[in-house]
Image 1 (spheres, rainbow, N blue to C red):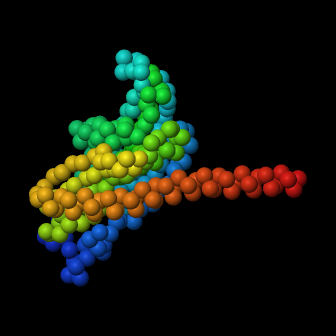
Image 2 (cartoon, rainbow, N blue to C red):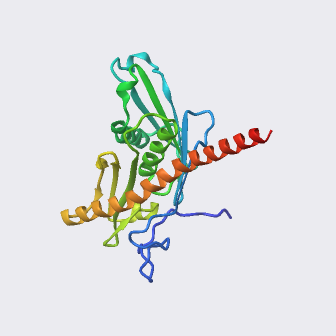
Image 3 (spheres, helix red, strand yellow):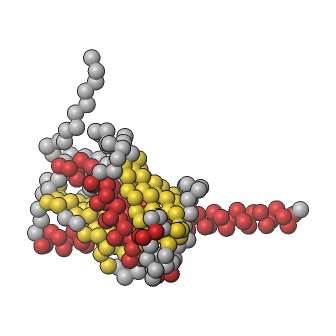
Length: 258
C-alpha cells in the first residue's frame, strides 16, 4: 500500500510552552546562512539558506540586450527571472513559469532598481536569475535578499544592499519571519523590504487582517529584524574578500621565501 502524505495545517500555530511550532520566539528569525561566489561562470552569485528555503541567484552583465528593442539609449535595464524548481514545493510544480513567478520577478526587479546606477550603462542589461530549490514561506523576501547579495558580488556599483522579510499575525499574535505553515494558516502576511542607503521601503505588500496600530508595530519589528539580516549580508561579503586577501598574502609570503 503506498504511503499517502497529506498537505494539512495544524489548528494551533503555537506549542503549549508558548513557542512557535518550530521552537522560535515571536521575534526570532529562522537560521540564516549566506554565501557568495558559488556559481563560477556567473559575473556574481549568491546562495541563501533561510529556514528551509534554499535559493540561488546568479548575475550576468552588463551585456548586450536581446531583443534589441528592449534596450534604452540613456540607461541600462535590469531583468529578473524568478523560478521555482519543480520539486521545491509539496505538490510538484509545472516546469513552465507561472503567473506567480512572473509577478515575483517583477517585484524583485522593482526592489533592486533603485539601488543600481543604471544610468552608467546605457544600452546594456543586467540579468538576475533566481532559482528556488526548496520553498518554505517568504521566498520573495529571500529572493530579494539573495539577489542583492549576488549583485554586490558581481562588483556592480550600488547605493546599498536591499534586505527583505515577512512579518505577520498567527493565532492573534504578531510574529517575525513567517514560515510556510504560518504564511498559509496565519491571519496576516506582511512582506517588507528596505533600501539601506536611505532606509526607505522598496517593497510593501499585505494579505490578511490588521489595524493601523498593528501595522505600525509590524513596521518596527520588521526594521529590527531587517537590520540583523543586513548585517549578515555585509559579513558574508566581507568574509569573501578577507579570505581572498589572506590567500594573496600567503602567496606573496611563499614567493618571498622562494
